[in-house]
Length: 157
Length: 267
Image (spheres, rainbow over the protein chains, first blue to last red):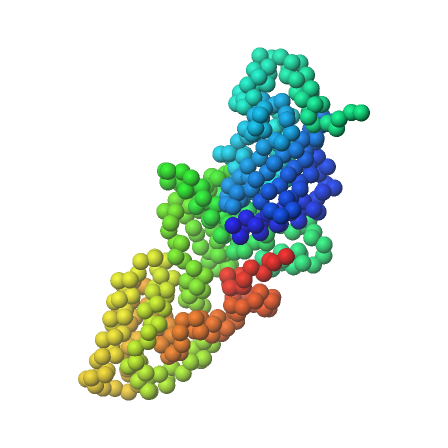
């Protein structure tokens, strides 16, 4: 518990310092609980998520960094590896391939990379996975772009 | 090395060359290296990670993937002081060695050093002259257990402790009844020979020093806590705050300073 707190505090300081360095990621720590974080990540360019800002909820376990944080999308996203309703993310480093050398910041980077490189063979969102697997790239892209516009961009007018 | 890092951090603005442990993100405490890829971590960080991984698998893990590069490693090399190093094998039972505390470590370290100033601290002659060995020492049992645990790095040493205690008690008894005559010096010799002979099957080359350390502890007449304090002081190590560790770190003769200062990384 103490170790996780100390480490999170170091990450917090690092985040304060690095803010300008990584404009794709904004990590915000809960005011009263260092084990609860929110992240705002920018949809990577040249993907259907471009232009969107996606909100993630990170819940850090007491055993952190021995255990990975639990991360899910709060913003709706159409992506084969993200559960459409719960926002749960299927990403190996958040499960079996976790290493204590990852940080909240690098986890966010990994999620951005996942957005750019979906893995349709282990889908949490079957509709999205099936579109990609059947080769309907246009179908997948237009669906994903639509949801980005609906959920991840500021409302127009 | 740990100090250098700390200085970097405190000194100029947190600079980019500050190189933290990848697991705790703090300055390295007790440098430890994986044996294949040589990535560096705090000893306690990499060991707790290896235990965590081991607990997640029902089968015994023979190796540990490096958290940085995923290379399979078989042991953690730590305690490098130029002359020697120690190894922690990753395939041992996960519960093993939990008993081995900082205090054990300091006791073991003492045996790597020449018996020095501490032997001047207590009046050993007086101990023998006034036959103070006739009074039982109520801390001896605990002290012996820790000492032997530290030396052989096993948790269950009760049989050896009883054996040594028995030898010491029978020595006292023999002298009490006055059957054994002799000067304080011969008694002293006799005591040390008895104890080191009794300890030799278990401690081998360290048996003689072990006998001297027992004598020293008994002569001090102190409880374990107070004794440790005096002992550490005479080694030039304070168990207190980390402010003094600056001076200590410049004394290369004292390895493992960082075991003794409290986590001074309080920023």
